[in-house]
Image (cartoon, rainbow, N blue to C red; front, side, top):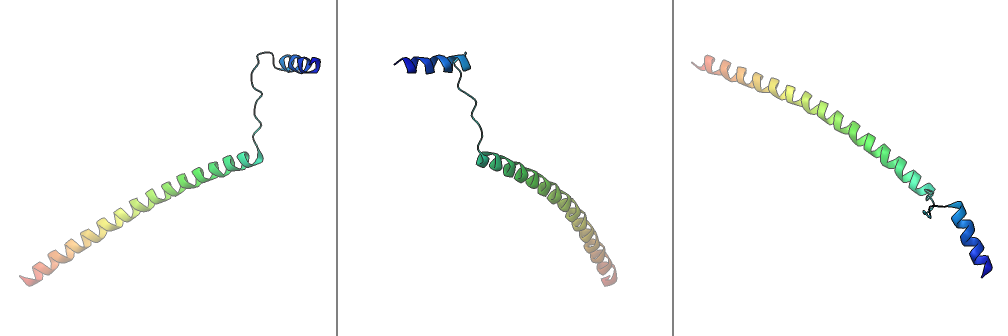
Length: 80
């Protein structure tokens, strides 16, 4: 009984506010956090690359549309 009281007293002295001790993160948690950060970074980079590709494709689509229009106008002139 006396030993239990001593342990409680020692625990209270080590942690006077009675707060729970900080939990140490495990290696698995640390690795998971790092991999998650890498994944986020990779996905953001992919997003930027896709946005650039979309702008490039949009510009090429406009050029092809303009070319098709010019060809159609030229064909109409030749047919008349």
